[in-house]
Image 1 (cartoon, rainbow, N blue to C red):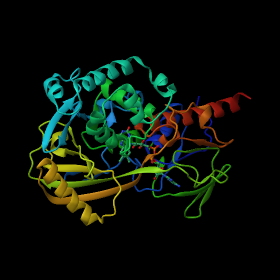
Image 2 (cartoon, rainbow, N blue to C red; image 1 turned 180 degrees about the vertical axis):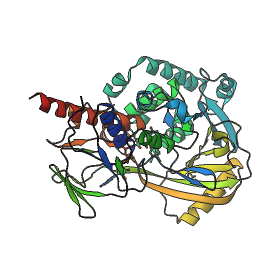
Image 3 (cartoon, rainbow, N blue to C red; image 1 turned 120 degrees about the vertical axis):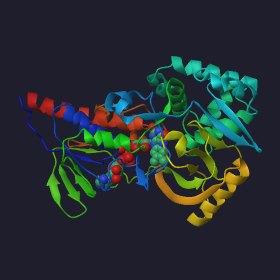
Image 4 (tube, protein in one colour; image 1 turned 90 degrees about the vertical axis):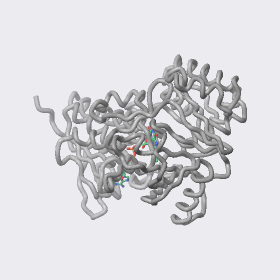
Length: 415
Ligand SMILES: Cc1cc2nc3c(=O)[nH]c(=O)nc-3n(C[C@H](O)[C@H](O)[C@H](O)COP(=O)(O)OP(=O)(O)OC[C@H]3O[C@@H](n4cnc5c(N)ncnc54)[C@H](O)[C@@H]3O)c2cc1C
């Protein structure tokens, strides 16, 4: 029997909003997504330029994320896997450091690497065993401290923290103080030890595009900014108003829902720069890190190591704050690459600043329950910022909000 169709609106065609729409569709309900951008995916975006795949901000999907297997056709994404380790450049030398329990090629290089002591390397092993035994619910119920304090209390040496954990996790948390919650550290560490960091063969944008492709044609309205959501009335920037029985705000809601505190979330930012280079790459998909507090570069990788038949291009991420113009920043990155790693960047291709990359949250949860997403009679919330800055949380919160709408509709029918 065809279900009665209430008017359901989703604001935001990021991964969270798309997952909400998909969950509703799977339950037999139509929805319409409105997004201010001209593309789907929000923060998950790639630009394809002259055959180059330029992700707008280096990000990876950890294939151990539970939500990935619930919502994505992982086979179709043809995931490119990073090896479980990194190459660290420090004081003119480079060290290949990684998880030898998953990739034996890391065993010797990790043991002899001049990054941390043997005790540190044993502690990495013991931490990965400990976290494998902890459920994700237990991780997010653990007491919270900063990642830095957590690592110190676990017994890691300052040398290991500064030479490895700081550059590696700064690239993930997009902050260099390791001030991010220890829950996020445990979550990410666990996901890294249970799976791989991956990027789809078509670039990171293939993730939201796959979600969008599963939705009924015409259910996404792009370049449609919502300015106000008041009860069951929605106003678009162009002045148009319409009614919506249920609205899922899959974006920070403070700016569009009256009576909510204005958006107070501080955000971590990052800049990604792309250059052609004469360096052939590492012959494996691996993340390069520079362990030197003076440099701006945090991490880099070669696109030809990740994507098949790709031109020789290096992607560099800068997290630290600075006052340089774009041109000065590009010049500084070229200089640092040459001095710290010996890599010569030749042609500058593109630079992209992401001011709102990851929400800076004081207290993290794994995901919202369906009932927690309900704000008012008509309005429900979704988005990663309600839980933790990850694709996993974005998807799970989209699903939770959609489930809340479905149970609201179906309980109304029963009355
Ligand atoms: C550089 C970078 C690196 C990252 N690294 C990783 C990583 O390695 N692994 C990982 O798991 N996660 C990573 N993330 C986080 C991940 O991308 C996010 O968790 C996820 O994309 C959040 O999805 P979302 O739908 O909640 O939010 P968003 O993607 O921000 O989507 C919100 C959407 O709402 C739209 N919108 C906002 N306001 C309005 C309005 N008024 N009207 C209409 N539309 C509106 C926006 O245009 C946007 O499309 C990274 C993010 C960035 C930017």
